[in-house]
Length: 382
Image (cartoon, rainbow, N blue to C red; front, side, top):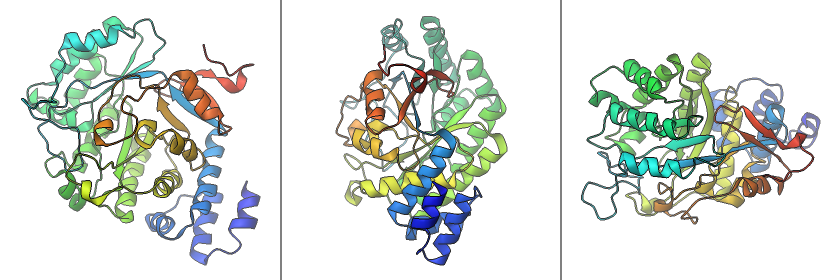
């Protein structure tokens, strides 16, 4: 791989791009300036070749997925983010708020299935604190004791912990005691304060998001990280965002994966700006893989970008495609994605991966291998 990149792609590159490419080939960390240069000047073919090289150094052809399901307890939210197609206020016709019994009925339906994770996120409900959600977690675990609960964005956590009138550290420790196993990466959006002010001015600050994840790591709760891209931000804002994540990962080492999330335009206050192209999606995955050298995994969330683009992304640095989802998750369907009920069976996920000559690896939330299909005589999934 290194020889091919050196002889074919590097030979006629401008000096500055050649220098950055050689850093990557030699396993050296690239700077913020390097990251912006890759976004602005590198051809998609170069980015794909470099990102795929890094991906294969880390994982070979292995591509990860898990058996999970989502619960969205409510879309009622105190915030009014401009990019959000999901939020409703109490009394709105299409608002919902599940009771604990509703959540347990959903959980019961998975009791005899081979799921390993439940993913819980929703709106920031004005009346629910950490003890309400803690009870939800503990009751879910009574139904499926082995389930990994990945729940609540930093924005939800900020509000529910303040409402309970305890410190961030105390609140996270309490939630861990209730059974919280890890935190998803939502709510990061974009960290730059000026852009954040434009797209989600009411929401918790970037510093608060980072502090909640840092504190979660300190009390032994791993987490994911995200970025919302493709709206009004510039390349420099994406790199600034990733730099802050890379610094925190240097400090704690407890981010599991990075998930770029594409802005989708339907039914929100930024609809007029449209959406970026698939080429831009692939470029963003590739630069993410190249810049975030201390993140083991880059995930493409298939309900957001579609199955075909997800397959393409596996040649642009991505090594994870999320999971079975298996519900009517609405955060992206309300924003205009094609698949309104995003569900794939584990067999369909494996086939998606196999079709582009990668090896399906079923994992749990923390990337422990459940089944390695490279070591199986058959790729059929029971």
